[in-house]
Image (tube, rainbow, N blue to C red; front, side, top):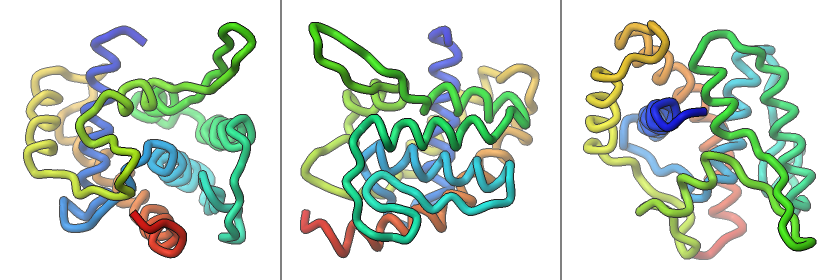
Length: 186
């Protein structure tokens, strides 16, 4: 993915977070691990019609489960593979949240473009579990995408898709917020 595509998908991501937060009215999880699972679940459900109940810190039955990093990233990547490429946006988002193994001096870890972008951002905090996306974030992302078309997708269609997938994320966000509230005390 080149730098222009990364900028575009980050703006699509911010728009989706806006819609997943009920247009800035509700909190969403801060950690990118939660958000990547919620997006994978929304895309998987849109493509297959099946709910994707697995998440970063719980299993399909909602029980707490601390997955090894390679387990949950594998499951997330597998869910994304089932989505196909309905259109360009899904392809970009799949590339954005896909986790890849890294190895350096006998140490291994997983990373994604989302993780790389998130860890240096102003919203990332290891000490808080939720945030509310701002109207300015939405406006900036929308303006950027007005000026930088994505592979011939009209701006109106792009906004419609972001709203659709953001709204599909909402039930998964609510599920994870309930889990966070029950298990974390930040």
